[in-house]
Image (cartoon, each protein chain N blue to C red):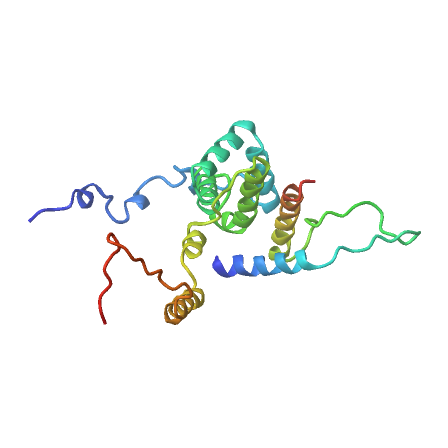
Length: 160
Length: 65
């Protein structure tokens, strides 16, 4: 019987509880506990030239705004800057900030992958209308009558 | 989270559609400028105000101002 290698290397359930509490940044009190402080922190970070350039290049390659905001905020939680609760509350503001940076640099960006997938789909009503128009056109008699050609090289028509 | 974002978007859209307030002149006019992201007890209102601030700036950029 083959055993999945991931199963062997995975931690034993409850192993995180055996370590010393407070070993990781997210196990300690966060750096900022107020929303205003967190927003100020990210505003400062994102207006930095290097960070802005990184955001612009990521947007240009097609990374969605939502995914990027999620990454930024989860790294903030992992580094002990703020709690996960605050990251949920701040998400829309970070989304807007990223879009603002995209607008300043005149980049076309994807807001979210879900929205993009919805946009790609043709609405059912619209598809039905197109199908109806095509069937109507097929039923209508052709306005241009076929030109009869005469001569030796003319294509022979089938006799009815 | 989705519920929060939906509620926030609804508030933001409502506020964005509202006509801007006419400035009053005189003794009783409010002094100083008040930013939309001023303090409010409701957390969604506060976040909506932040979003509106940034969105207005985005609209200005899009309109070429």
